[in-house]
Length: 115
Image 1 (cartoon, rainbow, N blue to C red):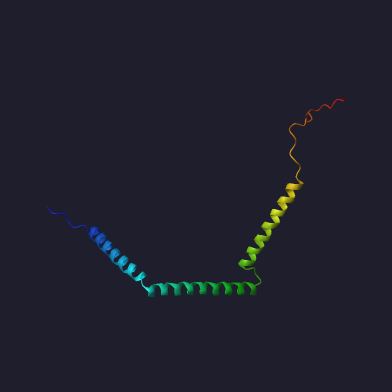
Image 2: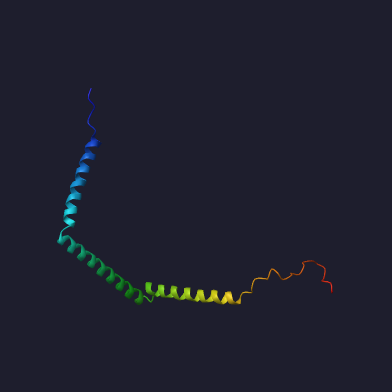
C-alpha cells in the first residue's frame, strides 16, 4: 500500500525554491548602480516629504494658536532647568543632619532638672 503524497511538502519545496530565486534576483539587483541611485532618490524624497509635512503641521498649529513640538520641547527643557535649580536651593536650605556625637534630650513627660 502506498501513502498519498503530502501536499504540505510540495508547498514547502515550492516556497523554498521561490525564496532562493527571489534572494538571488534581489542580491544581484542590489549590486547595481541603478538600484543604489533609486534607493538614494527614494530616501531623499521621503526626507523631503517629512520636512514638508513638519512645516505644514507647524503652520497649522501656529494658525490655531497651539504650541508646536519644538515649543513643547523648549518648555520641557526650561522646566527641567527650573526643577534642577529648585533642588539645589532646597538642598542648601535643608537643615543639616543631626550630629550623632551630640547628646540628645530625653523624651519624657518630666521637665528637665537643673544641675
